[in-house]
Image 1: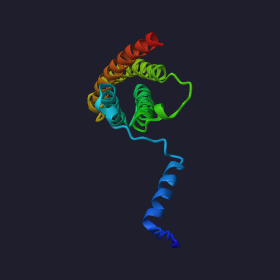
Image 2: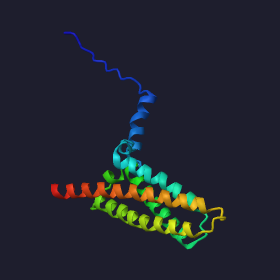
Image 3: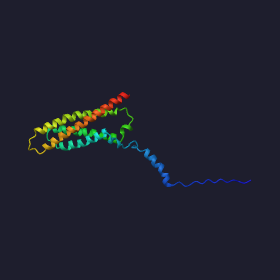
Length: 178
């Protein structure tokens, strides 16, 4: 009888191949692995409205400063706090935080309250800003900027109002499906 010999040949591991699985494990273990950049949201109407709120907020803040009058102080306060709130919502949607957090938060209702409050305060603020601008002496150098800030505040109040309307429709439709 013939004896049979079995030879097992094992290849030496390739250094590049050995490191790849470790890199994917490191990426999965990263504390920021839940972040997903969502640029498609900003191609929708609510996303475009947030960008418009952001840009108009920058214009309102830049035109209303420096604030020499009490009404302009209030307008600048409303523009700044609304801008910060909008910036937070932009990051929530951009980073996909809504989808990543499994918390019992009614995101639509929270955004609806935020946008609605911004709308009401912007309406009050642009009226106050235009009244203050009308009472300033004509020779004052910042009068034109204050009027422009009030007009852009009017536009931003309209954008926030439309966003509030769309959010209220979305919130009502989400309540009827539950």
